[in-house]
Length: 340
Image (tube, rainbow, N blue to C red; front, side, top):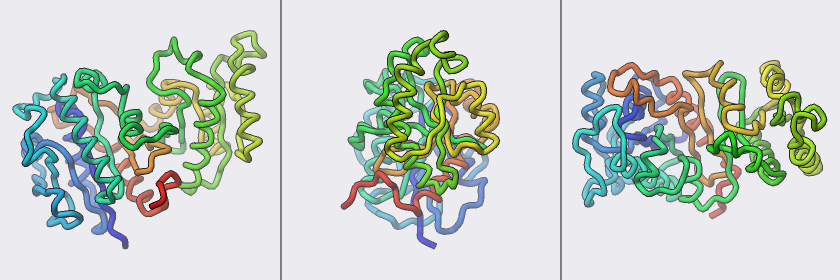
């Protein structure tokens, strides 16, 4: 079978990213055709591996290209260069500017490797949005940062867990700003990306359920006019483009219908509207797939969990699921990959 080389960034050094990366790499039996490159500080990874009684991945460098001495290796992408951060200690549960700088550099290295063909995809460990801001990055999270690094204008988050696939029309914005961030354009764009993703994932049911914003889908304007002014016109537009959609469906109904396999995916209007139901049924195995990028990127659908970092109790289920999905998709043509 074709070899698949995947990069895994460790995320915030003070979070559970290094722990779940090691656990996923060494406690799950991966096919021989899969090789994993853990990108991050070597001292940090060695310390975590010894504490968890797991193997310390051998060091690897970019100059070795796609030659590996082991199925799991560690690339400290700052080795041989002057570090932009200090690696001393990396205390568990603590984050800040230096941690943000380190995490961002590892993301850059993985992205560059994917764009050059060195890696077939990347899985990102969780980062702290505050530490990225302290490090000077003007992005609310991985998704927007990766879009900037790959010069991608149209992108979206698809969260998957159990039978659910949920795409977000808006991402990391305050609830008070959701209505003003919604537009026909954002809904149309997210729906088109969802339709392309369903084909990439080989999902047979191509119908997309469009979630309402307001209770009872606005109740004909009594409980809000966003459905009338924004969502319904967008639905009509995507239907004209040949995309199978249904909605707007009230949020208290649509996820039940999805569990009955009525939809291949749901388009939710805001973050917690979509992620609340998904995490209820798939808290330890949720996955995030970024749509629209010319590279493959998945991630576990959880945060840095600073409250349990360093205790050795973090569950690697979501990281394992994210790697599994990346292995499958790496062997299929990315619908957004630019032609050579």
